[in-house]
Amino acid sequence: MVANALALLSVSCKDKSQEAAQQTEHESLPILARSPAHRDFGPTLLRIWDLSMEHCGFVDLKGKIVIEPQWEDATDFREGYAAVQQKGKWGWVDKAGLHIDQQLSKPVEFHGGLALFERDGKTGFVDPTGKVVIEPQWELAWDFNEGLAKVKRNGKWGWIDKSGKVVIEPRWEYMFDFQEGLAGVNESGKYGYIDNNGRVVIKPQWDDASVFSEGLARVCRDKKCGLIDKTGKLVTALEWDFIWPFSEKLAPVVREGKWGFADKSGKAVIEPQWDNASENGFQNGLAVVNRNDRWWGCIDKSGKVIIEPQFEEMSDFLAGLAQVKRNGKWGLIDRTGRMITSPQWDTCTAYRESDDGNAAVYWLVARELADKAEQPMFTGPHIIVKWLDSTGKEIWSFEHSKPSPSPAPN
Image: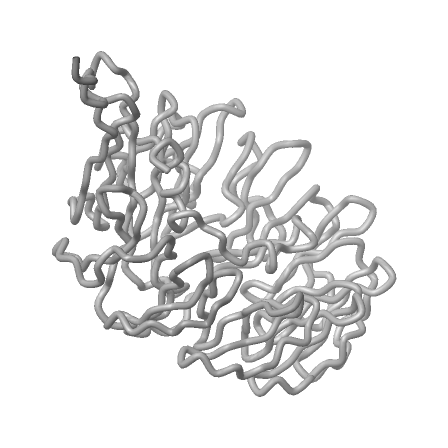
């Protein structure tokens, strides 16, 4: 397990999450992160490993062990619950350590008080007490959003409410989440929009489309894209090669392979000049952009470079920090570009307990020292793992090595 430990740290201990069950069938349709009103899910607990790297538990923000490492595998807490594995089967625990033993083949993750689970190849929903709220009956399902969940039956998609009642009959070839009261649907290869009663508001007529964001949605025809409002009126010309959803009143746009940013009239506020950019656009006044298909940095809404492109990879900012990669190693910077932790980590991942944009962010970092000259007394890699808070301050850490075997007696 030690040899693979670093690869496992970036998600759950092994991360067998339900990504596959919820993987989008149309990669060009981004689903935006939601930022609901802040909810308190109780004290923050962070996932840890024992010194054997074989069992998972949890510590509080002072580094004190709250739930002893005892699980073969575990996920981070999500809305007050963490999935845990015992004897190859999954259940979950609350923050007091109360174990719900569901004997599932995959971990669950709670969203809005319900979690998807699978039984006999069908998907349903369970509540935190372990009660099955919606019996497994769907070929595939997604988490609830705006009170409805997408479900698939006989190859067609529809929606159910939290009681399991079918609100919109499965009839669509593809669709995406409700956002701002409307959801995109696909019929005979064309996209349109319906309201939450299933009424067609904008008839399917577009080759491609996106979720609504800030009152507008991208639509495309003959490989050119523009913007429509919620009545279906085209408010900009079909002149862009691609448009990502709006954030902070600007949308990333692409023309002839270059990225810029447009306002809601479709006018380029920042002319296409970048070789790549974050599809999430502006976040708290900054957008991540790429120069020469090689270096990443940040600009502000005037197009001014705030952080000179200098990193091999870079994430969006979360709670004031962004992951950056230099010389193959990860570190963290603040919004001015100041290094909070230097690029020295093999993995660096953000943890936030919910989609709430106000929720605190914590960072899991790890590195491996494999050079036996550095660690001559160890036969295997020497692993260093740390949890950091949103300022980069260390909360908890451990080091693990496999000692060299004792010499055989004469």
